[in-house]
Length: 463
Image (cartoon, rainbow, N blue to C red; front, side, top):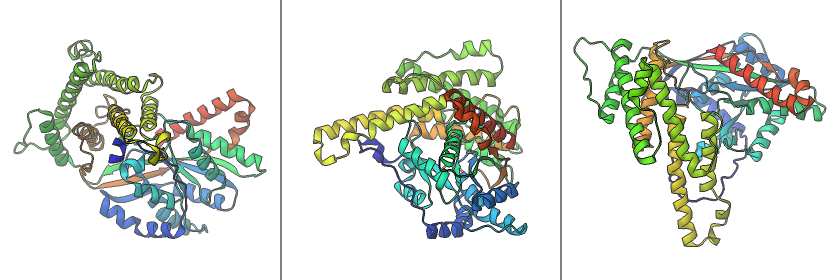
């Protein structure tokens, strides 16, 4: 997180999309080399690409508008999607004799907070690629107007992650946000008002990562590092003891329980939170995984409460909703209207503003911790003990420890070479549901909820 967060700032400015075809050409040219050089990904495959080819053909013929709603388990996802659009779609189109105009691209919707932690250059890159930002925790009307306009009138289709953030898990989808369905209906509304005939679709796209070779040894080494950092006795590798789910799972469980205990002491002693007693929970729930899940939920709730109480927010909705509200409240304390003209602010006011920004950032830290765990359940590994699930869970614990230690610049460990499988689903028609949407306010709410629900199921089936 950049140092800018610790000081009072003028309000966050909207970064307008400024699509640059030459820049996109360079990005498409360099993308395969960049993926090989900067990520653990060695192979990207896709199923049902012909569905996407057909949608692009219809889009270019002026028959439809559509949005790719993609899974978002990792920060590498945009590279996979960029590869799908720039390499795989044209390849499949050529093989089946479909003439498409190049470039094949999409207007991405991204979180306005990304350039704050990834660097302002990322905002510039996104703008040049024709992407448009949204502030997640509030009704960002400027951002929504931009996305709405691009959906109806943009040069390319749209792309967005309906989960709103990465959850680190390939095989669990976080609850979807209704904004994607709402954008679809707005697009249908705008087309109808303009007397245009195009149909509107939302296309679910699955993304799944798997290891080329099972990296059990790398996981064992990472577990040893995390055990050492947490104050647990480190288990050195024994001769002839092969790292596997059987040998490592007890260690992972012990580490998770130990970290949970440390955090429970932290929140009980210094933040006066009431948390369930671990021994009582263990007595009531003999299954260690289930007991862990119950304690984790209580801890996440307590951590969010600390942020919410500071920002005077109500604790309502899902953990994700609550995280978004805390994030936006924090931004409101840091990026302030009265600092627009910094010359008119006295040195004392500026120092007080910096103090508020520092405090707000400290309170948002608890929310960031919760964000990492919103999709975690006690049975993720147990119900399907694959190396991928094991690695993902271990990396979430790594991320938690890195956050506690304040390691901002440390790169996420790469445990082994990975391959990506992208699966294109069946398009969901928004136009078919538009008559029900426009009947009345209740119909509109129900239509948005139904599309969001259908999209959730479609994306779960793509796993």
